[in-house]
Image 1 (cartoon, helix red, strand yellow):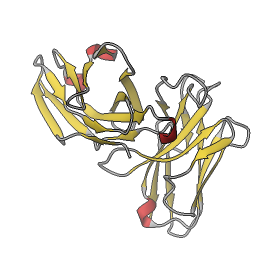
Image 2 (spheres, each protein chain N blue to C red):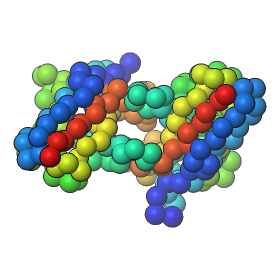
Image 3 (cartoon, helix red, strand yellow):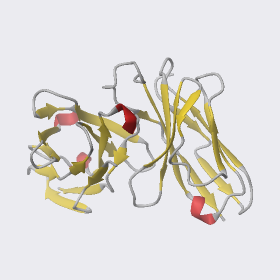
Length: 116
Length: 118
């Protein structure tokens, strides 16, 4: 079975400071990893994904994430946070094994609050 | 259309009523997913279609939940005899990926239907 853990319910950061949102995963095979952001009363918006190749993945709105296979982590980062980055962030994993199907398994989410 | 659309956006049902939630995926997307998101939690998988075939329904919580995609485009999630524990946001997602097709594509989500069962 696949699973995702986001250990922090909320992250507070001052505008202009670096932002990190943590994610660890567990899969049987190799993982496909995704980050999504959710604003109030809206669906999930795709930020970035790791499939293979470079461990550092760049995505939308200046976000990036680093895949670390030995630590089974995929932390989301942004060098300089904006107030508009305040939202709910979800990490998700899909197992590459065909038997696992195409579904995404999500973490519980991390609320990011960026203060001016 | 430009994205995944869902209707209605909000639904209030009395306990015991049947409800039907509609999803219009991105045109041409092979795969369609339904997820349930309880308040304060991450989305949880319900079911998956590739074209009109329902390939995975392992996440449906009970036989009161039923989903269909008869022509391989629009999908309907039906909940019979709703219970209070069914209150949640129901998210639909579509993807260009599918079995035998490049598996790398991300899922695109609709805005969700917020179901409240009184």
